Image (tube, rainbow, N blue to C red; front, side, top):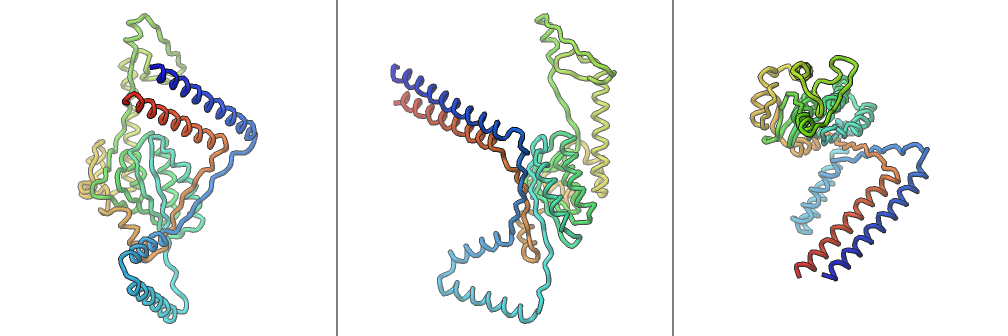
Length: 343
């Protein structure tokens, strides 16, 4: 037991020292960056055609022997040369701009999405296409409302928008998806949930049981309807439900505007459907994975993947490193300690 006690004290001292050093470094970095303008992000662009070509060539190198590979490369070079002779000037290929949106409850990815859309709209034309790979189970109304408005900019510019869903686009996620002229879904992706939900606990009776008063002062009859600590009234519940119904109607109108083929009252029940059933309900237009769709488009178009990455400040980078360091110290130390106990 003495060994374990000494080891525990040693581990505590080590963690304390690491945390103290990191706090000093973070404070120093914060002072240096104070008053400076936050560094901007950077738009990263990669050509997906090269990615697909690299996959194919890697497979060819593995499956074909040296003579077969040499013959294949010679044949490809001959074909390319013949094409150049037949056409003085090759016809320009259409462009496909590929974006990704992985949504959390706050639709945090909207910040990057807005910059990506701003960038592509400076060059994109109606002859091009934007493909959004969307994954989201929804979240806050105002957050997904803004994300949807960003996608609407693409439609308003006359650039074709295709939305691909491999896993889930429900609630606020489907609000974004419905803006696409074409919605493509994997067969078992989750779609729909065109509804509004709000829930919160109320501990007023628990407070009263312990003789604890909680007062809510408002200016405006409906400034607060339902609360966590105060006593909720039937009038407040009715108003809260009325607000939900209004939001739901706005949601339905928004979806119906971009998907007029839908029987909106039949699908706006808050239910979800898998891709196969969603196709029957006309929530989607085609069943296919995003990989399959993009691989097909890569044969005739130039595919460009856009990602706007925010540059993290020095304190943020040190903070992330600190978090990882402390976690490793704790995990490794606890692992060694438990190993000693099992021995």
